[in-house]
Amino acid sequence: MKIQFKGHSTTDREVELSQQELFQLFEIMKREFIEHITYSRYHNIYSPSKTEKSIMDYCEKHGVDVEYDKDRIAFFKAILSNLNNPYQ
Image (cartoon, rainbow, N blue to C red; front, top):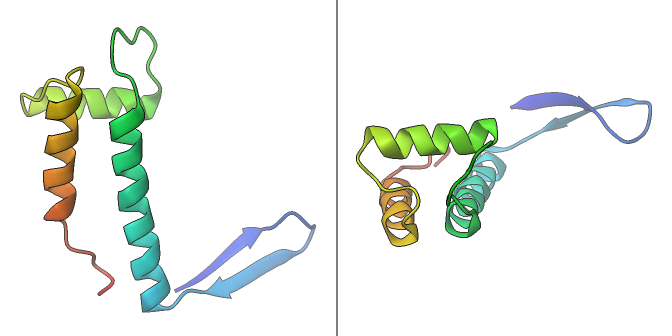
């Protein structure tokens, strides 16, 4: 996969990511999501971010109490542990 992006300098950059690097990125994203789910507070959120609102709606759709940490964390850990990395 080749991607282009503007770096901190004024030049455009292009890098190629291997399957192994895409695999690593996917695993990093899964870990970051679990950390977010674990440490974010969903108690009495009056103005959640778009991502938090999506998470709250997703939990509600599946009968998961987003405010109860153990329920929310167990739900998303179960999903992610069964989610195959498409870059294997």
